[in-house]
Amino acid sequence: MEIFVHDTAFMIAYYRAQQSDLSEDPYAQLWLRPGLHKWSQQFAAKVSEHDELLHCLRNRFFYTELKTLWPEEEKVLFLNMGAGFSMYPYLLSEKIQTIELDFEEIALYKNEKTREFTSKNLLPKRSVEHWNVDITNPKNQAVLLQKLEAYRDYKKVVLIEGVFFFLTEAEINSVLSFCADLLDPKDILMCVSFDESQKETAVFKRLIDYFAEVLQSTSNPFSTLPHSYYEQLNGFNLKKQGSSFELGRNLEVIPSHIKTTEVLNEHFYILERT
Ligand SMILES: C[S@@+](CC[C@H](N)C(=O)[O-])C[C@H]1O[C@@H](n2cnc3c(N)ncnc32)[C@H](O)[C@@H]1O
Image (cartoon, rainbow, N blue to C red; front, top):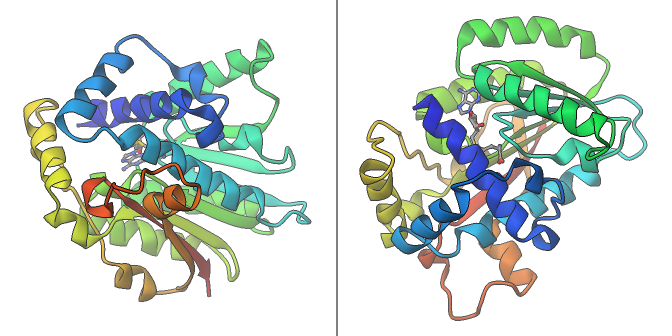
């Protein structure tokens, strides 16, 4: 399953690169590799033709939120859990310290390639570290908590984007309780998940079939969460919520005949540590 999850990170970068004006990620094209175009065509035919658009909107949503956060603060730590190939730090203020967490394979590869891209001036210089951390592993969480003591006086923002779908509800609970330990009052947590109602849609059923048939993955939990999960989350206040579909409608890039139930619509949650 690890390899598969890693592959999805490339696929998402591919999506963002196809419409970089919309995704606002000009650096996604650095991760393009052969085979992704064919894969995206197959996914469009078998599951949904709107996934590229929605993933671009997801990036735009979080980039907009991140760039408006704490412009006056000198010490900000951006912790991206399950960062894949997202490229926010290179578009954000150079004052921000970023730590990206992912499995070893992605962390090592991204570290090597971003150094190379920076040395060739394809990326601006930023303070970004890539750590090999399984965010669901209690031992890894304990080590991380210790290491992050060095950032005690920093304002912190945690982003967990495109990950919960791959975790069980018990794992999600563990990650979010760990985030509550890690963050101080007024720090920010940003999460993404499918709403429970998505489970009933034909497009979600096609997605599950696709995992089984094409990716040979039947063990994925396909987790969804109700909005009330975030409203009642211990240690946090829900400050804002949105979705890729809603943003697409506001920007008038989703044709009016498309209904929310016809797409894989991810919901976005911005929470503040109490
Ligand atoms: C679908 S990709 C999303 C990547 C990125 N957040 C984005 O939106 O472009 C999921 C990422 O989460 C990582 N991931 C999944 N489970 C993880 C775990 N338990 N610990 C750390 N990273 C994890 C995967 O390796 C992969 O890079």
